[in-house]
Image 1 (cartoon, rainbow, N blue to C red):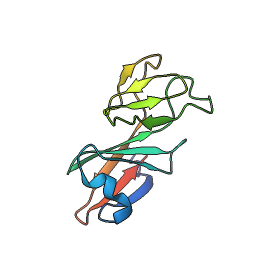
Image 2 (tube, rainbow, N blue to C red):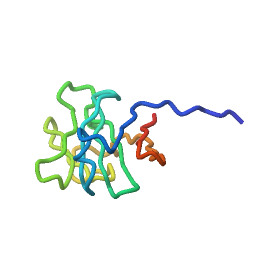
Image 3 (tube, one colour):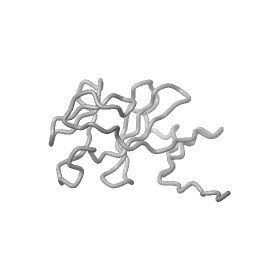
Image 4 (cartoon, one colour):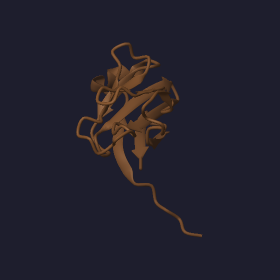
Length: 116
């Protein structure tokens, strides 16, 4: 068996004031890392989801960047109009593939690790 090491992308100190958007359920924040950045979403106190901001439809287009919609009900690519649920699945086409999701791990010190 080959063991693959986790490649840490980001380390987020959740108690830091600059991360206050993540103190409440359904809160989100943009992070650096990944191809076009990462959108980090708090599902609940113990579960955080991290998505690549590169849209899965015509991903090479420079405008293919996922954003949280102003309603915070879904994620959207303003380039193609695709919408994604907060689990990364497609809500509205033309995209047909889930967003790339990164692994997350919350440690006992309230530090969130994001892995590739």
